[in-house]
Length: 426
Image (cartoon, rainbow, N blue to C red; front, side, top):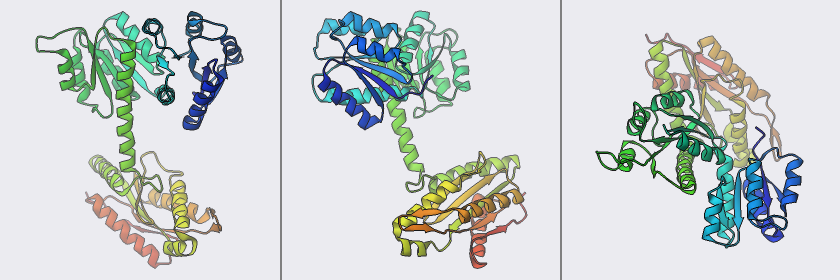
């Protein structure tokens, strides 16, 4: 599939098209192709529609009526949002009965904000995978088709067992839409099984059903068991889109907060708390399996002098540059975090002492050889590193040993790696 990044905007009002295209470009950075008629839109598409993932079109164009406009884009299998200046219930229902994403009124400035949000939502959906589980072929096809229209990659099946297999095999799945009536394992049991492994804040589940259970409303059972939301069959496509968007955005907001809580804002590396949590988990895994582990502490040499002579902005740029350098050549399981100030910590799972020492020396040389440019010219930077090259009784003990080695490196003249590798704790 071509890269997602272009919008086709079709409207006979140049003023409105200019407002909408400008808002999309400025806020989302997307390329907007503008046409003022259906024939102009067709010419644009015939020249190549690579990257066009959404069409925003007026309902009445100079050379086409409502039916022709909708039919043309639907036949070309292009996701369509209809934008109209007139609210008419019958027209709206007629349009939304077709495979279009939305019917938006351009009756106030807020509609432009909504369109920008809608474009961004559809664009971000292209990075998401959804799973539909329903034993009704027609409903399964309907929901799968709508989610595909909304930009999702979609997997589907008619039973919970297969659904669970797909979920376990596809970690990209962020949304599950499941019916209640399923063969073998019903939707409530399916949700319970999912929630044993996948929490609410990482996977959204929407239950759907037309049934009533002897244990009470199916909606309450779904929610209490762990579903994020519920829809009664039959439901409007518009309602499905709203529920899906709301739940996916909730996941994204939580994920964003999770990143903010674990990331050092200056360098983009793990902050101290997140590093220690991740390092402790890896320490326990390596210890349980009897695998090697090393920890290094790194400190920028004469950092106070850099701040005093180049200003704190210069010092910040040095830290950012080091944060870009250190991950180069890192192993898959390596963790790097900023401990505070100019001090960093590196966890090296799977490396014996000599390999860990070589990795630290690689980092030291990379920093020494880097040219870090500040506004008032380049600045030479070096770093001292202390290594604990073998597992001890606890992560805390390893960090303390690495810190001792770091002080030794500084005492011996800086810009070097000092290693402490006492016998491993058995």
